[in-house]
Image (cartoon, rainbow, N blue to C red):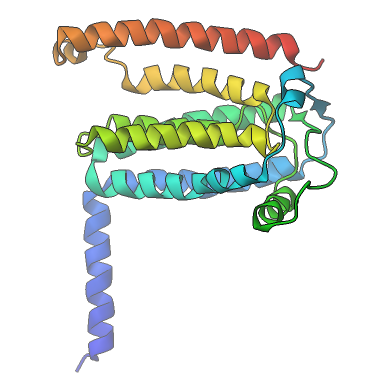
Length: 257
């Protein structure tokens, strides 16, 4: 006679197997360990790096309290990923495609044109929990392979996924995630993990990926939305591409040779 524990284990495995069979998009998550391995190899690579110097960076004060939203990024990525995985198939696929395109593009740039920064303070102005947390982050994340900022790409990715997820009905929820994405992006320069140029380059990359994945480019998609929505997409697209072009210009003009 089969033991109850074995029967329960078999039932759980059967349920998981059926769930995966019904949700094949979950296999996209295999990109995450592949990305982590590739990024660790990039961080361990011994290659000459160029140090970025941008005047605005030296005008932005170090503020250790921004490490709280900076670390919130990890929970945001996991939360939005799990929500879209469980609630809406198409939203999860676009979320993962944004990650795959964005993070792969970042790592290719890191490989071809590694950038470093020397903005970190030699000593923290205050000794508190936040400054110790910053020190821990510094010890785990060397200040190179930083342009474009993956923190900004990930934040924009989450905001885009929530804003376009049909199961998120409340506008307040979408606005809250968007604001959190902005605060996280800003936090990168206040804790001196990134230069302003890193965030500018990441924003330009995000705009391109966003319109690749979410814009109503096909005739069928355009006909499925209202004339007002089409007009908003057109205006937003023109504004986004204009700002993206300015970010690219700013980045290229200030890249170290």
